[in-house]
Amino acid sequence: MGYQGETVLVTGGASFIGSHLVEALVDRGASVRVADDFSSGKPKNLAAVRDDIEVLDGNLKHWAFAEEATRDIDRLFHLAADHGGRGYISNYPANCATNMALDNIVFETAVENGVDKITFASSACTYPTDIQQERQRLSEDMVSFDERGGAYADEAYGWAKLMGERSLQAFHEQYGVDASAVRIFTAYGPRENETHAIIALIAKAYAEQDPYQIWGDGEQTRNFTYVDDIVSALVLANEKIEDGTPVNAGIRDYISINEVAETIFDQLDWRPDEIDHQEDKPVGVRHRAADTTRAEELLGWEPEYSLEDGLAKTIDWYVENRDKEYVVENLETLLHER
Image (tube, rainbow, N blue to C red; front, side, top):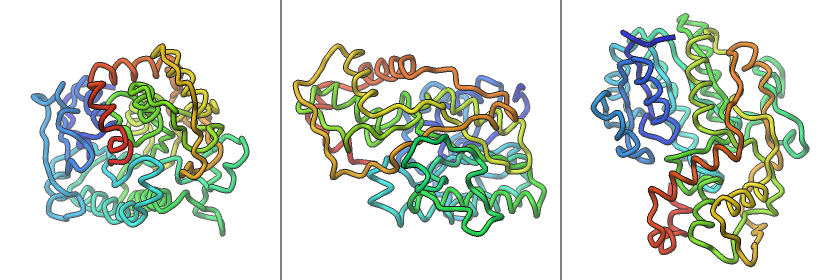
């Protein structure tokens, strides 16, 4: 559908995923407002559309700013969150837990201001961790709010995302606002930072780190999903789901960290003499991949990008935008900053 005449708010719109979503909405004719505190998002992420959008700089945990941001809005994509890669969410659980307050303030002010549709960027971290030690694709009905013991999320970040979903459903039930939630699985692509797995692996190879460090034994798997596919799922969910039903956005493939590293070596035409598997580092669950049946049925959504295609675009962006000498000198800082 077109968005001509629609005013759309993207919270966290200067972030990695958020900025790609903003560009897609502008392309569809929307009048876009971004609300971001730029704690992790960057103004330069919005450079391509800066003259076409409104940007508000502030903290959405503050009621007055959230009320301002959600005023005169037709549709809301709520991506703002305190988050980072596995190391961040493991080391800063209290920071991640504050997302529960953030989400409810955004939802309440949006409803009070008459926003018609709210789409929440949720996470695969909502899924029980104990079922992710073996290979079984995660389907949405593996999380339940109706059964005793039906929820067991991944660290404080996952619990906060799960409570965000439940809160949004409650606002739908009480106030009738159209609501949707997209469980994002291991997104990657241009503009992501080095604290996330794919960009971290690219940065280490670009800097020619040798021994090349991989967290864990490298056989842990994820379903790495290119950012454009995530954006299309968010847009379709906003258009097609009204009752808060969550949908997965991820590929169905189990891809090991070792496989990703090998693909990066091939595409950069460089290979280390030695690989150092650091098994004392946090790696999260053992295996994770998405069952996308519900997204196919409700949204007509399927991912378009293979790992090779997505990595090629991401590596091209990284090499074009990162000075190699700077990456070499600042690699450890880049890998641990939010």
